[in-house]
Image (cartoon, rainbow, N blue to C red; front, side):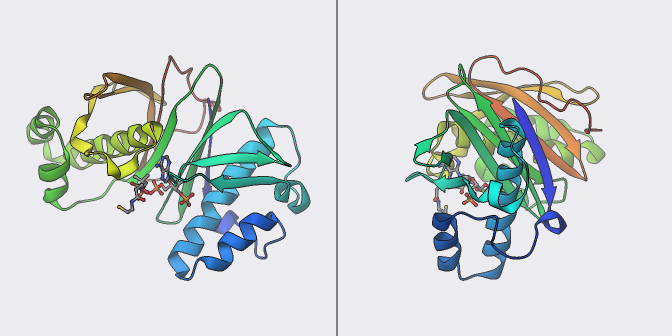
Length: 228
Ligand SMILES: CC(C)(COP(=O)(O)OP(=O)(O)OC[C@H]1O[C@@H](n2cnc3c(N)ncnc32)[C@H](O)[C@@H]1OP(=O)(O)O)[C@@H](O)C(=O)NCCC(=O)NCCS
């Protein structure tokens, strides 16, 4: 399992690094924040895929790697006429984007990036399962904001791995295990209606929580350095 974090400042000007299909999508995006997020997400995903395929990062090489949205919104990688045999997940938020990549035997992957910041209490009240609400209520003040970011990020990662997103009730995904330790820490979430379990990792970087969840038993993300 591989991941990459990029910032808005990393994205070059121009569209030479986008493929024809991607330029057509960009032309339909009218709102500036959505265009910025979409470009940052595409840039991050293409950089990650290029590294995995040992391709260079020049615009022409990146333009040959198209990141398409499937009907449910999940991204897929298209090389020429063929869909590449990798799972890809993207998250973009507040000028940062995270992309994660996995291959067989994994069949489900989701990643998410959430800033560690104060949130509306309704998020916990309406979208957290009972045991998650209890864990948040029991947390010390200093730890609560971080715990809420972690649980919410893990839910979104699991909802992406399920490929339903918020069409699914977020209370049906429950974080069942989160290890506190240095660097990448173990994380698990359970989708109660189907008993599907996703395992993976979380870490903190740049005042944000990063989570990556997959089916099976995902290995610790590469690169292993880079998370506090
Ligand atoms: C998946 C979802 C939870 C992510 O939302 P978010 O946390 O606000 O945004 P993030 O930046 O973390 O993730 C966005 C990325 O998730 C991916 N994504 C979108 N839908 C997805 C799905 N069904 N499964 C997996 N990944 C999905 C996309 O790559 C998207 O980025 P892109 O549109 O630029 O390609 C949300 O987009 C969603 O619920 N989508 C499906 C339902 C829907 O379309 N609802 C409309 C608004 S409620």
